[in-house]
Amino acid sequence: GARAPRSSCSRDSSGSPSLRNPRYRVVLLGDPGVGKTSLVNLFAGVQERDLLDQHGGAAYERRLTVDGEETTLLVLDTWEPEQRGEESQRRSHCLQVGNAYIIVYSVTDRDSFESASELRIQLRRARQAEDIPIILVGNKTDLVRCREVSEEEGQACAAVFDCKFIETSAALQHNVAELFEGVVRQIRLRQGGKKS
Ligand code: GDP
Image (cartoon, rainbow, N blue to C red):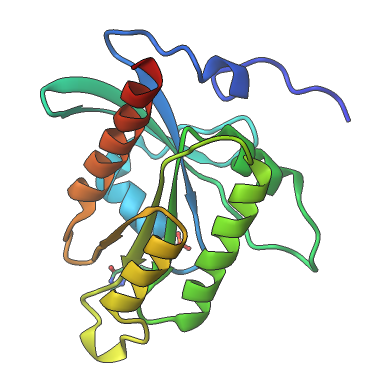
């Protein structure tokens, strides 16, 4: 197909953020209904919802200060479910462009937890040689009585897949700021490691 024009969303602009206010692309993955849009709305504020990425998906940009240093996160909420086993362009685009990934499942939906593992595998396949930060997120912890996946299972899964883990509730706004701060810290850790 035609080559995508170089833009702020192209992969090759990702490696050289300005030193004073670096900008990182974070991609949300996960089954429909697990709370991706709810989480990113809390992060960005609803009024900033109008940004669009080059594929027409929702993108949200916000500056945040973590450990005294400012960073800009561009969060892409463009993931779509697989259709009849076909790999869509948007899906493979998503797997290529992130500087970090947030894989979300709902603690009330075991299928979405299985999907999260599958996504982790797809991501590893798509970005084989790269050490990309990945955060596994169990959302909807407020729905205590509907829980199907325990916190221990989530932790164990994250350990197997070598990623960070956090449980959140978008409804109660619990751990949402911590999630995005954690993403920034993970990105910085990787960069520090490369320099030394
Ligand atoms: P997405 O398809 O992954 O983007 O999921 P949405 O953000 O659209 O959320 C799907 C539904 O789950 C919506 O009705 C949300 O209000 C609800 N939801 C999202 N997060 C939570 C949560 O933490 N707790 C509860 N109780 N509902 C949630």
